[in-house]
Length: 356
Ligand code: AMP
Image 1: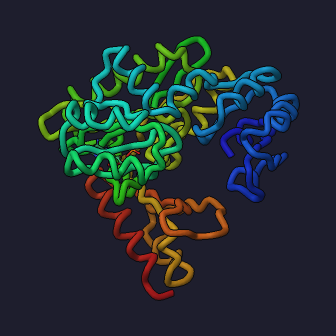
Image 2 (image 1 turned 180 degrees about the vertical axis):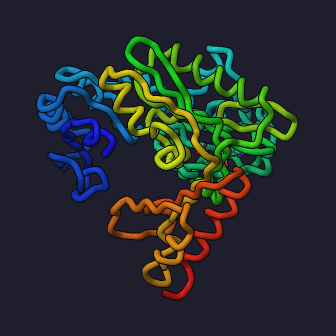
């Protein structure tokens, strides 16, 4: 939608028909991400390729790059889609992360458990998001069975962080290295899935500055073009740790549609098309609440109830099958303070369950 508003034609490639982007694209190609011939044909028909999903195989990004400009690069994608490469990259650039150890084989388990301690979280290195491929560990003896549960796939054991809160910064970097950012945004998760985001985040200025500096450092190091979200842990003891990188517009940035001078999607289009970046300014405190599939369990949600809050905005993505945990849309609320925005968005989401 942001691209069309700027006058571009949009093609999409995804494994399914009738995807949220496909519904409004000029051309919807249905192909698997590892069908490199389909990716090549797709890239031949466009000028610039980007992603809104990071688990696109490196071979597909390389095939697209033979025929079109690919932003962000396949190299950035390869780092962000693999937890071990990502952590190693962060440590190499002096950025703080939670203590971790790799587990590739059975014999790695005991040394990893000893090095990381308990409590911890065992995470597969690839295809993990929204808590998928993660097992909490409360006893060192639990690591081995948990690794078997995860299919003995390459994993990392990561120390559990006693969290004060979680924040994200969404950076935008243009072709000449110019950059800007949204955030920090404060994120609350429920069952490992983002639940509510609030801007501005209620964190000390020193923490906000560290998070912004870390985002710039990562984007410069990767010579990144496009939008990159960094999710951070703010520990109760005051440490700021990088949790993970998302090389695309991010769920925590969805409030930028309604609350910022330029949305994260418009900024993404501007960056990858070599246009000047727009002002990222937050025009008003805002909060975003995700609408997950379980909201449909009692039938169609009461949209009128939520929309009766005049500063609440509804965004539905056009996904046809509501499943538990599936992100179907979100609400954004604008208010005079971040606290009020959060209260309002939660209240509006609650009202969706009321009788129609
Ligand atoms: P992830 O997919 O790694 O971002 O994890 C999803 C969510 O699980 C995070 O946003 C946190 O709320 C929680 N989580 C993951 N790893 C840890 C950790 N090491 N310590 C505390 N909470 C965690």
